[in-house]
Structure formats: C-alpha cells, structure tokens
Length: 119
Image 1 (cartoon, rainbow, N blue to C red):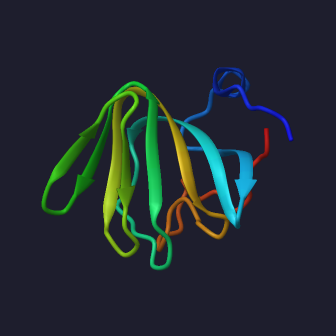
Image 2: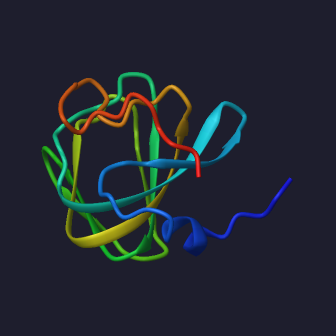
Image 3: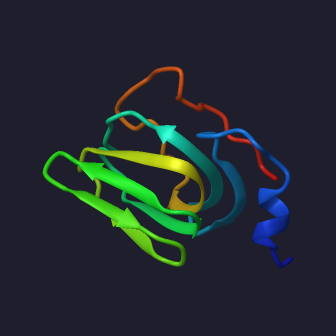
C-alpha cells in the first residue's frame, strides 16, 4: 500500500493521448493522461469509461451533443456510446476503466496504445 500523489505522477510525462497506469483495483486501471487537440471518434463495446478532469476543461463530443467537463468534474461514458474527447488547451485527466480497455476502443490507428506504461 502506498499513497499516490497525482501532481507528482503528472510531472513524470509530457506526451498527449498516452495514458499511464498509476493504480489497479478489482480488475480496473486508474490512469492519468494529458490531452491536447482532437482525439478520434470511437466507442468501447464492453467497457464504461470515467473521465475525471484534474486540470483544464475537456469537451466530450457525442453525435447528438457536446458536454464540457471542468476541473473537479467527471463524466462516465457508457459502453457502446460513440464519443470524441477534444482538448483545446492541455487537460489532465484521471481515467478509471476496466484493465481490458483499449484507448481507441473499436478503432486501431496512430493513437492506439496496446501497452501502457506504469508510473
């Protein structure tokens, strides 16, 4: 058992759209990521995703609406729902999702991270 300082962990990396695992519980990964720019449209067939904004404002686009997520707010994207995260300025997020979750869901491209670093 060790406590995790999120700011310390965030200072260990600079790259965008490359989640880092910082904890695990009950088959779930706790991840940190820095986001900037537009991601891709995708969905996750079997997994829900939690996006908790630690710093900045994240725009989550859905086909029928857009939701702004500000610091200290989170949004759960249900499995099967197509979405696209957009960060006009750098955003730091905590992600909580099943360990099996591929960051690009049903899509494989240059954003896909098959192996995530643990920090």
